[in-house]
Image 1: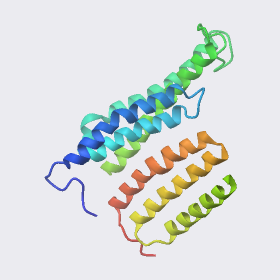
Image 2 (image 1 turned 120 degrees about the vertical axis):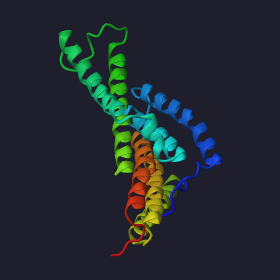
Image 3 (image 1 turned 60 degrees about the vertical axis):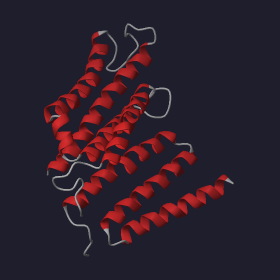
Image 4 (image 1 turned 120 degrees about the horizontal axis):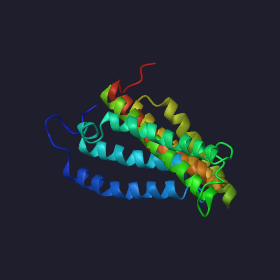
Length: 142
Length: 81
């Protein structure tokens, strides 16, 4: 297969401009999907995959080195762990407030169950995004 | 009306699945798999499982296609068996 971008040449200007201008809209949509996960189709997993796909598109447009330059592996690992920590941590907070694990009832918000689900979705979204990106990055580096 | 749409989507997805297995060029196979994902996504939507359809569109057509393309790029484009 022919390489893209060709050896020693910058990426094509049309592909770069189109992909770079699409990326913010995809990311906004991903955030929308994560945040509205409890009331409409979507959720943490789908939103995280959409966010990861935006970075994959950026990497495809800019060439192989872009992902390595912009997103260090340590940051991906940290994000993947932070999402799990957010998920499990909310469960522990619920335990500390006297309820069951992940029972959002006693959280100090006006609508505790909605807020609890939102935090869970954000945690799942962060972890899925980081895991997908690190799979993609490892496959590129292999 | 909606029943015939079901039949069309099912036939198209079966055609894409069989073609993806039969074709020799692995890059074409990956593209056919993405098309299969698209038809499955439309089928899930038609059945009312919007959440599953969303996952199918994001994962099936989006991420796995990219991963398969990278795999083909790293290995070999033509199937030999």
